[in-house]
Length: 375
Ligand code: HMG
Image 1 (tube, helix red, strand yellow):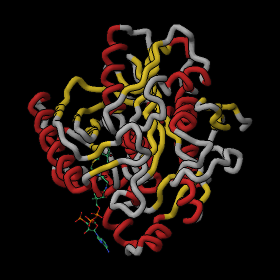
Image 2 (cartoon, rainbow, N blue to C red):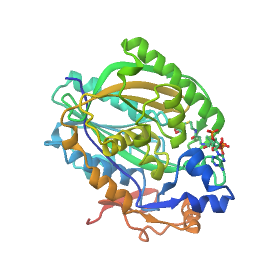
Image 3 (cartoon, helix red, strand yellow):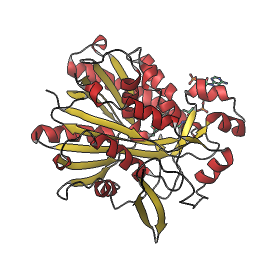
């Protein structure tokens, strides 16, 4: 049996902006957004939601499938949008989930690649410690300067997955193709809220890295393209994943992987795994035994192509109806409200509904005050 993903769930903000509104206010044809880049909505995070609140919500849903939470020996919080350069965001998750005290908790960063790094580390750990489980939370919110080419690709969400030795969803194979290359395509200095980027250079390096990683993967594995049944690509916007698929694997199911992403926006570390959930939730055929290819890309840059085999019990582990309800129950915000939120001009923590069981109630003396709310 291959070690891998035993349970998986995601969460996003309760609020979204319709990109038709953005197009109107930025004087852009809406067709450029929905057809040219493949996005129709973006998640917008009000003051009471952040990477911790959505991270807790995703983790709470994934942990429902874990019989004994004391089996979780490590919690890794993968993010590039942390608000604290010292304390791990994972410690808040550890507290609200009431995980045991002798559990290692730390954050991991390498742009959108970090949850993949966490998965590979967790896999090695559970191979050495067969009774252990590792909880990985990938949570990000991405903001670009208003009016920039990146703005319609903004978004945010969290994914949480439990890694175990006998996974009920996906066994991770030992093959991979990795590529690390120093490039200034996208970066966010610690003192800025918005990312800086060279959009065209980033898209170029993403596609170049796809080719290199896929080639290395096939060389290492002795497999062929026809051995990959479906593929998920990191999706900064849908069209990027479609282009990467067209130039490499040409898998037919790519559209099903992008359904959630097109209405959430870029969720960075969570994006690749939300594409996987989207595939499981939307593809009608039985995926048992299928090989799924995964392309992870984190600007800066580190990229990896790896694969997994879908377990026989995966359908019992899905929360398709809950995922679809979470997405359809979101509230649309107006453009002026979007501008206030993204300009950090709103400090009214009580004004908005919360997606889950924990809210950011306020920030006092630079200390974040997270509180449980009744569902
Ligand atoms: P742009 O330069 O404004 O767009 O933004 P464009 O002019 O290249 O047009 C985009 C597409 O829309 C083109 O299609 C146009 O033809 C089409 P393509 O040639 O690409 O097939 N188009 C239209 N289609 C229909 N009707 C119309 C119309 N007009 C144009 N009327 C850009 C594109 C990528 C630069 C922008 O989205 C951007 O800057 N994004 C932010 C950076 C990014 O997402 N990069 C992706 C790779 S890097 C990455 O994935 C890492 C990341 O997630 C961060 C991390 O790792 O932490 C970002």
